[in-house]
Image (cartoon, rainbow, N blue to C red; front, side, top):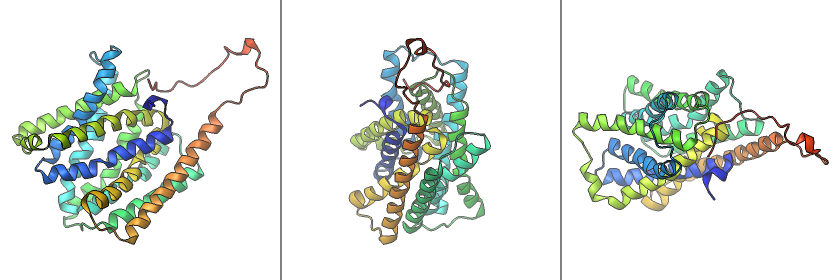
Length: 322
């Protein structure tokens, strides 16, 4: 089934699961000598390679309009290049556990920002799911080790991560150009991010780039995972909204936990698995809330529908998902 036929719940699981693969793939790449900026560029390149053929087939790969170009520039620099570069900068100073906890705060930050802009908020079940997911992700992050060693400025930089993520999530919903498809916006957003990485390559002298020749299959796997993830990512943005999108971090955290055990043999104690159970329970509440919302939004079908009424339908315009 194509991602355009899937509902928000399925897109949440698919997107979070595929992004969760970034943790083991990125760790393997780092062990092989690939620099973090190089690997972040591989992610964006994978998205571009996966999305471009479909856009070209439908003749939508031409020069973007002003609104699409502006949207892609801000989205790419904040949500992809900005987040990745900030993350890679703070991890050596505050530790992976603290950085993971900051990501766990992004759904709460997104909810606060979304409410401030008057965007739709989840129902009671969705809020319970959000809290459970936050508690589970925090528990996993805090029990995985990696204590903070940096000073106050690095902790302040780490604390800005959820705000940057929230800003990107809400911006993409508010500024979505009318009539633009998710694939088109995903393509140009990653193109903007890739251009930013290119400038960093020039500035750094291409550190870590040569390592990609030693890990071609790993590079291909990352590109395939990223290509599939970001086609679903922007569809989830269009259909689920910023708060639901932000919860992909919970799914990714669970996938990263399982991958750490199965691929690297990392030891995780009962508290980490308890955190994973809380994440799973939170996702259950989130999916139930989404199903309830979809059922309430579905128009009731009258027993007798006069022919004269069939054309008198009215719906609010939404971002296209083709």
